[in-house]
Length: 335
Length: 294
Image (cartoon, chains in turn blue, orange):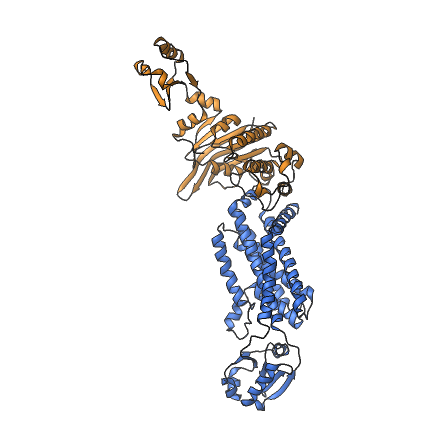
């Protein structure tokens, strides 16, 4: 424990005294959240999203004109409650169920829902049974916040740990540590905890700071959110450790980290929702810890999801953390 | 003295390169042992196998008769040729970091005094001069009060004054009955510090023993130096094989009395004659056929 704490303290000091890196870690997410909040404050949708239960073939039979109408995106759902939740939070403009007698739900306070209802009536939808749901709109910034914070955490986790260890290896500091009784696991665990503490503190500061200006939506428990983000950060740091476990080349490490961060950035739902994307893309996105962290965080913040409701994400993130740390420590090379 | 560390038929094979070709070493406790050799001779590879940093391809290394293990890490001190330290830490914080990595340590105050670090304790390690940095690295190598200390070219890049100060430090450490294994390019450093040396070339040890013994073994004669202007062409007439060395002529002879008498009898001006002692550099060139390139 003494060795672990010594390395942990030294790494923390190194990070905190590197003023330029610290400033960048704090300023970048602030600027992104504030900038994007203003940029997208007027909304970014140029088509209507309609949840569909019962399948497109059935819809084709009961409402072919509606189905053929342009600029409508039909998103298939199996679970009524999940789909209704989206309509409640204005994440979807309407839900149509054609599995039995056709009916639809709109949010009575949604302008998009109101307009879409007129479009649906103009097609075959006039005969559909009308249902109303209630619920406040989730602003784009509320939807976007977990993504932007998650993405910032991803970069800080992967590059902050991966590059640092590769630099240590390249300049011979790891070799110097190898000559001491310090074990590989003690060293790696200290790096992980150091980075985790710093990222969580920085993320909390950024969230709290932005919250002063924007007042984010928070329906669920902060403790559950903390657990999810901690596990998400831990799993991404563990990936950074794994990538840095062998290489002494900053170029190679940078390439590998980019290879991982770009798909994760695009497919984890940080920038845009994957609803309506190909099924295989949605399945593929589940291999990324960022997907689970962002999904769980959005569910907690915007839908008030409880710990048990986000437990699948918690378990996946925990498993990823354990596997990546274990493999990283096993294959770790000091030189 | 029993050997503190022994290497038996130590081999290191890289793809296409035999870096160390089966060397045997037994380093007695309490001495300063010098490992010398030209660039690429296999010194650093050998020392890193002795340190347990590199795994040997073949052969064994024993510390106090036992294979290298956890105990070895606790009891050995190492100063690498190239080492980086944790950035943004002061000298004091760096000492404290390494102190916490060992079970048994020297008091930091003692190390500070031993290595003359008092004036730079609060300085960022990135802002140290070459000599200050080497003193800190030596302090880190000594922090666990090791019985065996490896110093891999510790004075390379230092100015002559800093180098000599560092020698005094090494002598001080040696006086504490520590065993030191030193690699160096500087032959005068090896001569000043080492009780025993081994010269490596092409992965093998080509000469080993005390500096005096090796010099006596390889050089039975002496070298006389006379300014070329003073001797004229007389030396050639006397049948003495005088080789030019700058503005001097050098005469190698194993019959000193006879040679001097011959020159005096023939009127050679001996006022500025000097007898040059053989050095380890001569020995090095003699056994490796190469000049040193520090």
